[in-house]
Structures are given as C-alpha cells and as structure tokens.
Length: 91
Image (cartoon, rainbow, N blue to C red; front, side, top):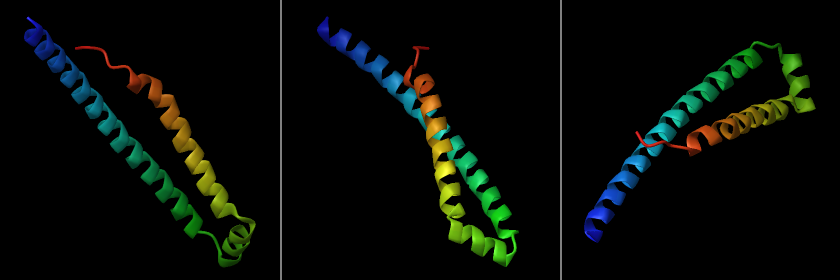
C-alpha cells in the first residue's frame, strides 16, 4: 500500500518537475534571444554615430547608462514572469 502511494507521488512530482523545467527552458531561450536582438540593435545604432559624438558619449558614461537600463529591463521582465512560471498546474 505504501509503496504504491510512493510510486504514484514520485510519478506526479517527476511530471511536474519536467513541465517546470521545460517551461523554464523555453522562457530562458526566448528571453535570451530578445535581449540579444535588443543589444544588437543598440550596438548597431551606437556604431552609426560620428567619432566626436562617440567620444563625448563615452566620456559622459552613456555606454554604462545603456548597460544599466538594459539590465534593469531584463530584471523587470524576469520578475514579471516569475509569478506565472512559479505555478504549474497538473495536466
């Protein structure tokens, strides 16, 4: 009796864990692609500026500011998705 209960519980827990890992992996892959595309577009726009403009922006710390803003968006998106990914219903 106990063995059957343990086997049933282990199977259900394994299924939930597999679903959670799959959802997490898909979310991570999509989020990584989005951040890569956004970073690429920012770097492309950055490269189109003239030399004196780039020097001024680099001296003023604009490159650091862009990194901070992109990092903040990444954290915000992660925290916004966390409540939805933390709950996995049984299928």
